[in-house]
Image (cartoon, rainbow, N blue to C red; front, side):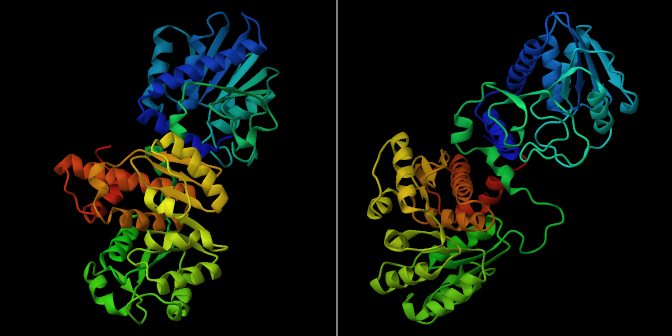
Length: 477
């Protein structure tokens, strides 16, 4: 089962793996033609009602596989407004081959004739809300027909995730959907067609996963999260790197709670950091009231960068987690106490292999073995794990992802602090597995771009300026 948004991400990831979208459309169209053959004999009249996107493109392809039928292809709108190159190419192939193509300039007078089968290929899974013209009138015309209706991917007007319609929708007899079942299609007779999307497009984090990070034009300050970084004491660079990474990864506000003894040094790394220091030179139980009050006012906490492993500090981490019920990224020395604590918090833990073993977790060299072992340990732990390595593994025990970006130049100190900060910003708005997967992908991609430009010898701070482009894309992609 896959949602519409996730399906769009998987489709983009497949393209990034080298599976051409044109090839996927060819497979989809063949599957649609197969669905028509299952409901009608050769020679039957088939009306394909097509939109101007890739859903319509699937039907353009299907028409070429229906030469032993009597197909007519009805395009809702002008050919020059077809929205994608591959759909446009397949329309051109139909016209060049002299298929019966008809341009519908006014769907209110759409004449389907008397077909045996109607193929609904107007809108795909990514469209929600009430239908507008020309699809609204075309849907009504399809519903008035006595033909068997085969919908492509989802009946037009039906939300693929909920099965609900916000007005008129195509009353389909059958649905042929692609790659995996959709949550909103339980009430239909559905064929799930394998169109050749590799399993890797779902398992490996790719550019399609960045679709989660779209920003509406009417967004307001605070919509993308406020993050608190709790760190510092023995180290000053770690909390500063994590906080700057959270800012670069899109958090609206980032504050740092660190010992007052190192606050000036932490502030010196970036003028934009907002500091909320506590007394002393390290975190102790005595300083927790201040930290708890701050944490309660933030959407996510990044706990651990630069805190050190003093027993008094680890006791404070235990006490904080025992009472905390919010979202937190746990990193560095703070990871050691997680298995000991019963907490209601939603945790994203970011250990490397050594830290994972110290937590009582598994050791596996091959990422395939690590994937299963980390999933099992995450289920036992009750928290999401982002295990860093040549292949990063992210799992909550139920859902798992693997990230392949990154390079040996990122073994330099501080890159994990950047990852923790980015994960904190994303955890403020995303599911823990998605937050961890996207943070690992962007952190590694930033490192890859730097090494491509300058070779090894990168600094952790070099990653910061490349994080935004790695998360949201850029002109060169």
